[in-house]
Image 1 (cartoon, rainbow over the protein chains, first blue to last red):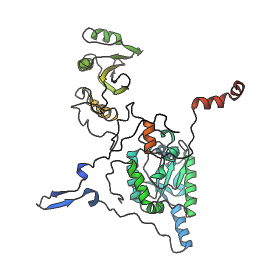
Image 2 (cartoon, rainbow over the protein chains, first blue to last red):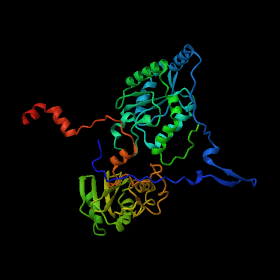
Image 3 (cartoon, rainbow over the protein chains, first blue to last red):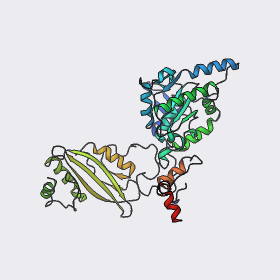
Image 4 (cartoon, chains in turn green, blue):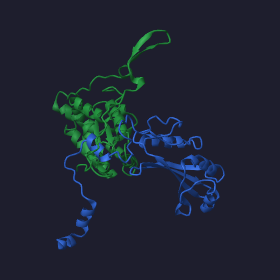
Length: 229
Length: 185
């Protein structure tokens, strides 16, 4: 599926850094002169670490069983799939009976559900939210948009493959997947966690440079530290 | 109703031929330097108090941008679209339109969007040079017709290998009339 008209070449000029993000020296109200570097001063830029396994398999299995039984989802909806997540909270589908609940902040969540197409602008926020979540953490991609672009396959501002940018542990196919499909996806993810295969966060830590390179290739005005939790 | 309004105005302004989509929806081309006077008169005298939208069309072959000001008279339930043609410049921001943010404050948002998506600048409009939706966009304004969205996405985002596409026409022919196609062969 190549573009027929291949004369168009995209502009690859770098985006200049915003004025307020540049390192500079400022004078405080006390009269001191201090050096500030906004991208380093406010954030930790330590690289993510691989979460070590427990010392014995039985203990690790027990941990995984416990993790799989309390999936806390970050209430961050992108695209139309966020609509399909709402009925899961209601008595009709009632995801809470499986130990699944939605949390308002990344610090309390262990599962990030990318619920549909991701524009480049939202990808930036999704990456920040993902990196702020404590380990162990999992990512689920909903719908064909996160798998191969879906109906946004020729969009100038929507990423096509989510696993270039974030480590995905489980995909749910569909456009959009119904709440039942989502529940099934959650059950499959639980099985995967229990069998010890949901190692997305460790994959992210191991291949950090590749993920960062992919992210920076599409997010042109990168105005945050490389790792910002 | 709409015809009477246009009839009242036609002696003082240069109107193109009005296109009536419905009895209560009409489009008419006006001259650029008369636009402001017409909009003001329609708003203050004829009761078109609401700016429904302001959008643009890129006539690439004609080297023109068309601005459409859709205004609405809520009381009489009439919608009138005023079209203005601007010379199309290739350089983003070189084409300039006349700002109407003092007539309708909401127009400033539309003008900011047009500046980003079409590269039509509106000097004097508040915050018109700030980013509206896109962040760090360095390419052509994406709604322009010489911006190739498919080529851009192929040069920027990775395709999943193995994705197939079907020409809808051939695919539906095969799905609906398999016997007919066999006989034709």
